Length: 238
Image 1 (cartoon, helix red, strand yellow):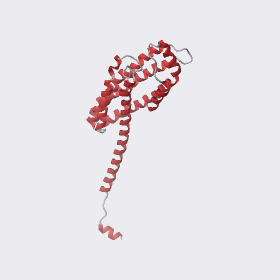
Image 2 (tube, rainbow, N blue to C red):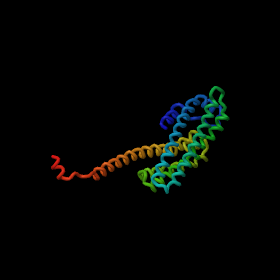
Image 3 (cartoon, rainbow, N blue to C red):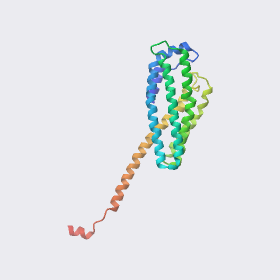
Image 4 (cartoon, one colour):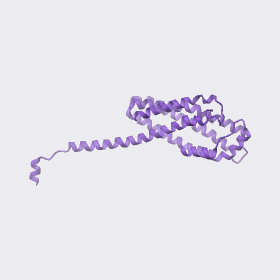
C-alpha cells in the first residue's frame, strides 16, 4: 500500500481535466509505465486481501457457528470489492496501454478513466463499508478480537459511507471530494486497508498469546496430575 502511494505521488502525478483530451493523452504518454507498475502492485494487494478475508471468516465461524451468516456476508462483499477493484485496475491499465508504442487517444483514456474512478470511488466504498460493518458486528458478538477493533471497524464503515456522494461531484482532479478524488482515498481506501493491517496484526499476536497460555495451562495440568512419591519411599530410596 505504501509503495503504491509513493509511486502514485512521485511518478504518476495529477492528471489533467478529462475534457482536456490532448493534455490527457500527453499526460498518459509519460505516466503509462508508472501507472502499470501501480496496477501490478495492486494485483498482489488484492490477492493478499482475499487471503485475509478467508482467514477472518474462518476465525469467526470457528469461534461462533451462529455468526456464520454475518461472516459470509462480509466475505462475499469483500470478494465483490476485490473483483470490482481488479476490473477498475484493468480499465486503468487500458489507459496506460493505449499510450504505449502508439499515439495515445484522449477520448479512449477519458472513457476508461470515467469508468474506473467510479469503481474505485463510490461503488467500492459501499462494499468496503459493508465488509467492515459486518466485521465490527461479529467482533462484538463473538469477542474473538478486542472490542476496540470493532469500534474501529464501525468508524471505517462510517468514513466510507461519507464519501459515497462524491459520485455526484464531477471528476476534477483538483477537487479532493470529486469522484475518485484524493479525499475519497484518504477517507475510504486508506482507512480500510489500515483496518485490514491492524486486524491482521492483532489476530496473529492474539493467536501466539493464546497458544502460549494453552501450553502453560497444559504444563500446569500435567504437573498437578503427576503422581506424588510417598515419603516412606523417599526415605527407603535414600
